[in-house]
Image (cartoon, rainbow, N blue to C red; front, side, top):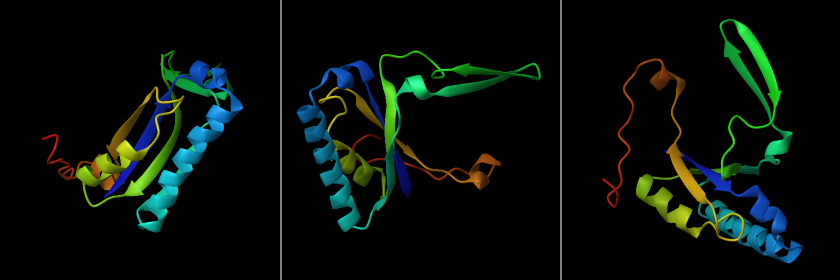
Length: 134
């Protein structure tokens, strides 16, 4: 099953890091992705530009509103994603623990199974469980 790892971190904390600290974190993240690629589970990954480059579109009562900036103001911002094809949630959890936390260790990694359009259309959603978490 494919899992998306949503990487969240504090943009201000990242901006405050030295170039050496940023390079060190990126090197660790690249090493994790290289390992996943060698093991045949890596599907893709990309960083996102800062939230000040975002544009949000909202629809309400037939009207479209376009605003600069992210959907919501939060302490942590979505910084990027990784997609891995894991045998189960337990394997996905193992990979997530190998990812260096964004912004020098602060932040989190949200893991979500990737569904299909057939599931959205009402077909049964596959069971996603973890031996460690339920």
